[in-house]
Length: 444
Image (cartoon, rainbow, N blue to C red):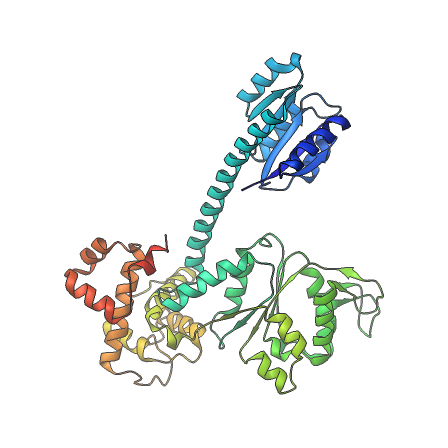
């Protein structure tokens, strides 16, 4: 239940009295003597109510109401009026004020009005949260494609972690989409409007690493012409993505750990500390703690980076996602190249499903582009026989079931009609593939 109240009144005695009444009733109170100060500190989606006098120096309560309405029409504003201001207050309610109280007012009348307003505000914010969550889920499903259970789990984990102020370590094989997941963690969190800065630790020579990470002042070293902002500073307020973190030189690991602990950095050639507020998302193929035990990575930094971990499954562990991903990549390539994307034949699909895809999603995307360009079958060089025909048929059947259930959001009647299956056969196949209707209801 919400309990936050902002009180705006130029009379100190009224502010003090109202604060005492509200504190005794369990409310959290913030006081302002001027409407301008209130507006300057009013956060977006404020979880409470504004209680304001009408007549004040500077902006009046009515002008405050108008500005609040412009920012958030659903934020309740209760006006405090003198006897002569009642007609004006009634008119203000037509313009969006939630309520008005005529001075002198009783504590009981004030509390009753505030509680009604807070109940309404709570419902509005919960509705906004659910709408935003549904919007994020839909956008995430179009970014992290797949109908497999592992991809559904990954999307849920990404949505949960995106909103939390914790560092995240992403583990996955080469080409499995680690940077895409990092980008989603940024885009669906509170730092989305701030910079997302990516740095591949394996691509930077060791002698240049510190300058790249921390920046430098003019003349800090030979060739340092002019001041340069480093990646850490540039990501201030946002997210720094450190790919192949296991390749970071040990000397720079010590300095990165200090930045994480103190939230400050110093450019090369400077003694001035610069405050930074950033989130670190790191990606690695090997286990960082194994690297630490082998002496190749600092253990204390490994623990700092692994507050939360995400594992990206390789493509061979989610073969049912291959047809959907291939179709997506082929369509994207066709649009980019001005070509037509030919549909997959049965044998072509079988070959896609049988391959182990050591290059993961990146390799699959390349195969799709080659097909669009007419450079051969949509398969990598040296493709192996892989799974048996029965195993390929099972994987394809599971994909078809999951794709139909996803499209129809668990509507069994619609799935039966599309796949032209009797109910008993459908139930047997669902049980054999470990599927339940409930797995797809949450995808609304």
